[in-house]
Image 1 (tube, helix red, strand yellow):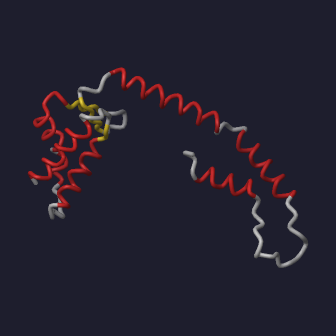
Image 2: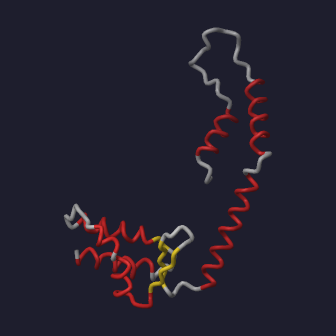
Image 3: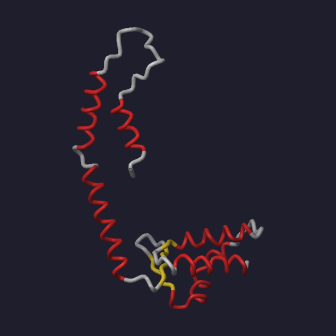
Length: 154
């Protein structure tokens, strides 16, 4: 148990303090559980997870900050995380949200549907039955649309 905690402390020192960021406490708990599993501990007591905050507060004193979000989840960040850094990240995320909202406004979906309908109707598929399955009959525009909606981050 002690070596798993030391590995977690090492992660915090080498990752969280080097690149200050806000992480959920659940992420740190998962790291601890994975470290315990690597040391052969298969069953982790609930109290070990519940008292992790106290262990971190004792080990890192004032260098870690603990904040509850509006849903009651605990967030952890190093005290070295500056307000400037948080403000810049907040601004970037807010701009990205605005772009995503504008891309998915209510008029975009009907326009895309009408365009796809035109492309599909204009496609010459022939009058044969059963259709020839050796050639692709799915328009490129439809493939592009389906790829776009299944991987919205690109």
